[in-house]
Image 1 (cartoon, rainbow, N blue to C red):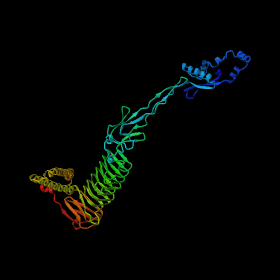
Image 2 (tube, rainbow, N blue to C red):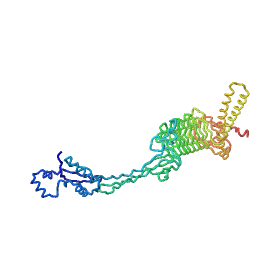
Image 3 (cartoon, helix red, strand yellow):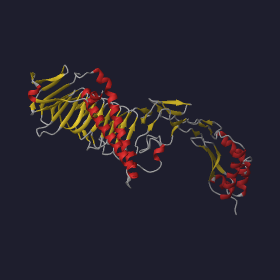
Length: 510
């Protein structure tokens, strides 16, 4: 094989980032033409260029000098690559470009990040609030779509950014890295930092990530309805629900509940106040308990206890309610059912023209009297069960053992009912002592009071003889028959209503 070119145009270039130096050898056609000229011409050229022998034309040291002129830090490794490039140039007989020096790029730092503990990622839809709830059989009513935390829970860990590693370019200069950015998530209200990285909840609540703030909120906001997409809700704090609550679901909070839609046959328990702007269709199955004031659009077939006032916007139909405070609703109508109101009633209409049976117990004295009647009946039933048990023990019936087993269940249920009545009496006893039989209760009806309404006030049972047009006011008077005011004019109550006094079984035996 013929020898390749011996002369070349030498170029060394360094990239803009300084991470590579390239040696380019380009065939020098003019120099090689002189090499191919007649001998006497070559002799003249050699005489003129005695120091430029073909062997010296691509001397590695001279090429290294060209690299140094470009600032390249030439070491033994660079010299070896220069020699390899020159050799390849001679062998290939054409232009050659090789990398003769390489730098080390800087390694930028990693950004800080957040590591969620299992079950506590608020950005994961459908994450269970309690990892234990994800085990075992799936209960679709109890599927949780929000992240609830208890006080002192380690919810997440913030990992700090790294500084990165410096690099070095082919000129021997350091290349500084770009440090990582801190994690943008910061502790917000209800979250503290321990050991510089661990995010700990300061109280019970809902874990929320809003923007870059991780907080524990005592307000749970449900954007839709409580249904299979959310599951039952049990929350330490307040809850607002943009939709309604479907049948058979449960909503329980330690504070207030605000519901914009309709509540079906659901169980709702608010430790504080309760607002249901549209209304409740209880269907005789749902139950309502409110620890404070309740404001409701309408109530149909609702059972419940309200420890404050009940503000009613439209109607209550066939309800069984115990309201410790007032029933307030100047435009509201109460028809059917059997309810207790501890302080008084101020409504638009009681009953309806068809004379539907509607019983209203007004005041704690009347309520306690009714409870004592109920307690007496329950205790009589309990005594009857004991007599049946004694008779069964004396019999030789083959079904005796079956009846005795059933007796234990019946007696336990009966005792539970008796204890409940006693607890209710104990709860209202202080109020009963503070308010004697002439306690300050008030009944105001703005539009009409119809036949079929039965009012239990103190120890009196009052029923209208016929429908009456309001405004009407009934007010107890000195432990006697309440006064009646019709359109501001006092009228004899017994002219318009049937009044009878109820006996107190507790005082008979007392």
